[in-house]
Image (cartoon, rainbow, N blue to C red; front, side):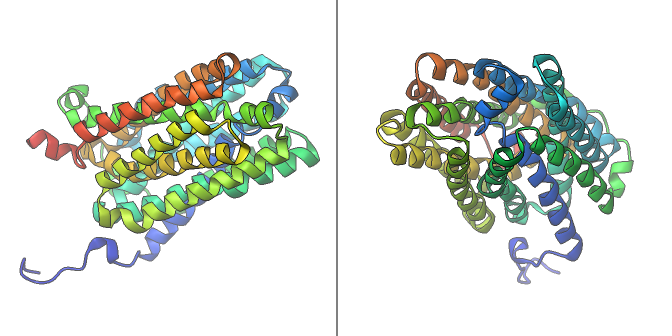
Length: 403
């Protein structure tokens, strides 16, 4: 084909059968993971009571789980050399073990082991799955595919978490851990249906961190990922306690509230999948960050005035956060294409550190100063996120290096 002949945009080409298999398996395994990660927040008081722990101790366990993201770069570099699919399977197996441990444990010690294993599994699974998908989807239509996959986060909140609430009410707090642990092993088996790319069998040159230091766009993206997850987790870790103490919502009602938030997330994921490739990845992330900032500001000023105002404000933050994260995944994968798994792992590690710190600050602020103060801290962090992303991040880190 010559340069003068018309081309069909990659984003408008039909997705082949092999790609549909990748998307379906990725969505299935992600859905299990997402429900397992999300269920802790709306039912934090229930799990704390079942384990015989305080809210602050549960916050520490969540911080411990999220802190396991620190190991992600090591496994990201390994997956670049031995294969992303194999690494993703390993992550699912470890995740399943951690969930099963949580299902049988009583007390802080074993619960900590279960949360650590769950965090390690998630830290391995998510970046390697994203790297696997990024290797196989052209950048021009990657927003469409990653948007579809990331939609599981919203579905987990809108459908999965409320079902967990029903299970807890009927069968106790342990049953979700058992069910999701078994589902993780089934997901690892499903990934055997995917092929490992031929190029993954060739040992790649080890990633050099000097490459990262020279790439200002990649560094700015990693900073952005830290800030956005800190800002969001800072309210996420405390909103269940806030809804319970401020408005008297029980477990079933909090599950319904989570379903309400899930509507905002589905809208965000679907909007990203449908429109991101057309409006541009960076423009999409910027818009999402601004919406999230507005949500935090509303939550700070008006969140405690009435239940509906509070729910809508939290929903707006979910909308902006989800759209920003989903839209940012394609940019993440292009910052250092030669070491995609490592770059994604580094960004997700930054997000994990942000979450770990926010788990501690958010729970402490809610217990001490109040939820509105926690929302105010998130407003400041979100403002910084907009500045860092707009000024520092390019859609392609390679383009930044050439400037």
